[in-house]
Length: 111
Length: 441
Image (cartoon, rainbow over all chains, first blue to last red; front, side, top):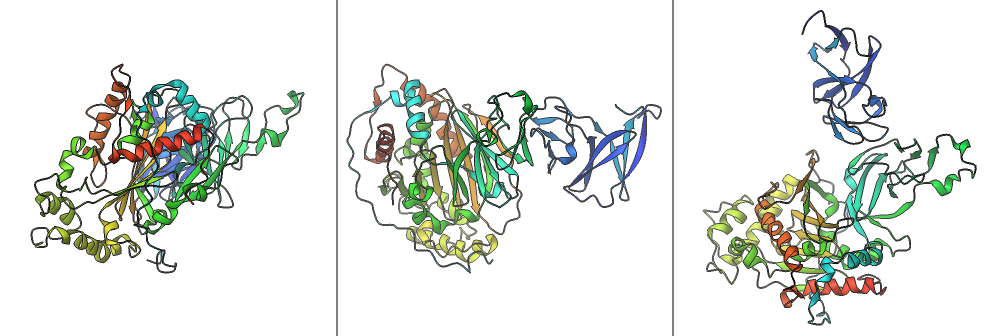
């Protein structure tokens, strides 16, 4: 990743249990960090369909269900698995280090 | 396990024969399988009045969990309530008729219609209406709640009935709970959850599994380990049963009376018995398997099979629950087929396969739902095998449907081995003529 185009942000994931998710505000953007069986995935906390916060939806395995209309996304890819969403949710690279998760966001961050 | 120790012992599954049904021998008109007019009649008179298995209770353990049943032109939401009860509502917004949720399962704190943002609580009541002051006729919230659908449970299955005045599920099921409670379907877990779209009428699919007559031609390999000749058939008021002996070679097969390689491999070895050391005769296969189930598998599965006879731990106890459920029950496990009609096309249907294992102690995750469109080379991989067998049936079905359209075919010319199909049509006809059966009692 080009350092001039992106930046690493550390997030405290020490008590984010497997099967759960939590929203973080990073540079004014809401990011949802998901722990799937000990592996972390980050995506924009906003459904690509009607912009609802995905943090209020249920995470089951790698599937995240939007609470508003039931769209389902694969948190590994951001791609929709069930309508009404048709577009992917942006995902961000993550790297876990000693309970902290470093997330790479484009610089400037997406609006 | 404590699952079985605290409850009273159930009476055994009755093995006595029912009285022979009083049925004619006429040809079953083929139009019943082909005609859009008949499909509409069938929908109005039968599907909207019968109980249909919608899914598994265990799939919606928590308040707000839901799944849908897609049945003909209807979609029903089955929702776990805060009280723990399971309720069903039509999956349709009262405002303009939009579907609230896509087919499948999920979790909702509320249901918001994406068309105009009308929002409903999980109990179906209206939570909010967008700009309610712009409705001069007012918004009568009780009238605008999601319409309820009758919903009751048996055997770990959730059932729905589109008729608000329908008799209770238990009455409808009739003999079924008394016969099948000892199998404890409520303790079964899903191993596979599969839907196959097939180019045939839903009854063509029900019929294909409703007789032992097709085994020799469609599944010739199975004659090495199943008896397709000595198959008792019982017809009840709505439902029916046949018992197909397994672990024995058919009287049509040269190995009849012998313990052949297929029986050693697919039965003795599969149940963990040392098949090469087994020196028993053909009559001793069933007791050996039953012993292995009771002494070895029961502990591993956390299940108690003492309410089942040896025969029930080996043979296929095959029940058809009218109109669209096929149970193949093998004791430890069961295959349940659900045959769903297409909303508009009598030449298409949805075949659902629930592969179940009685393993109340299991922590296995629920399998993902898999959806296929039937093709000639489709072989669905199933836990524990059986995919090849199913493929032999799904290969036939579009061809049967296509052939029924021929001017050279009049209708179904059925023999005694196919009496359950005739009985099925008698029941269907009773619904069509508004002579609603009251249940098997």
